[in-house]
Length: 128
Image (tube, rainbow, N blue to C red):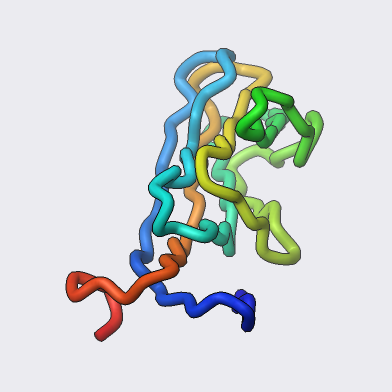
């Protein structure tokens, strides 16, 4: 994702990983709130179910005003399967939080692939 009015540089590429061992709402990733960052781009959210039973997951986005928005509500994940939740990229502004909640503890694992975009070029950038 590129906003042409603002110079941007890929600062980092990472995977955020969560094992949903409880049914609590669990943080997957928090977008950096450093003033130099424009956005974080979530390019993939994989959910793996390692149990022999179907389960569901709820994914939410909490904005900087603490408002909660549903991304997926009770999305079914088949037994012993992996599902890609995103069709298109999901953009997070600085300080926004991506969270997940499993219907049943100890079954689901989440991996989110993330690109962090910076307004200034940093010598320690992931890409020279």
